[in-house]
Length: 169
Image (cartoon, rainbow, N blue to C red; front, side, top):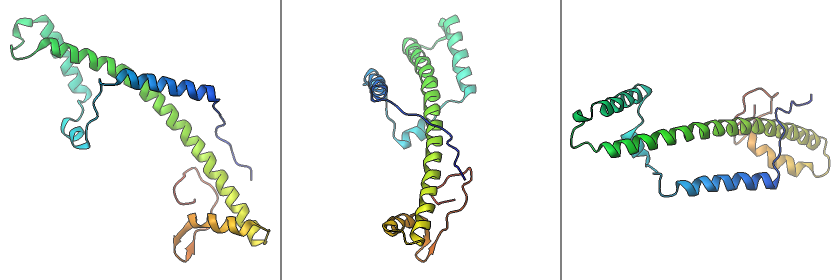
């Protein structure tokens, strides 16, 4: 049975260099401006939900309309800088999230193609090894270790399905 190739692509060295340069430019532009929180800090500060973003937007609007009610201990200029920077970052994050999803989805299809082709190769090597074709026993012995569930029970490769996992399907 022929395998469906879900995706076929390649990158030239120039394209990869261009992508790497763009990523480096982003890293350079962000240097000294971004923070890397610990997992505990991420838990502590969390993220504000959409409802809370609406609240912040509404409060900002009222602060601008009724400046006399902004408490003296609140640094409105800093609030405005934080608000603007958050909007600027959020717009770029949306673009990066889209790119990340595209790259991740493409990788999923490439992984699927690679895995199922590797399974086909393994099955062929197993068959050739069983037929005592010269040089295939070493390859088979090396590959079959990936399908052992217990020290004495090898897993027999099954027909491919749509779900890939670390164990053969």
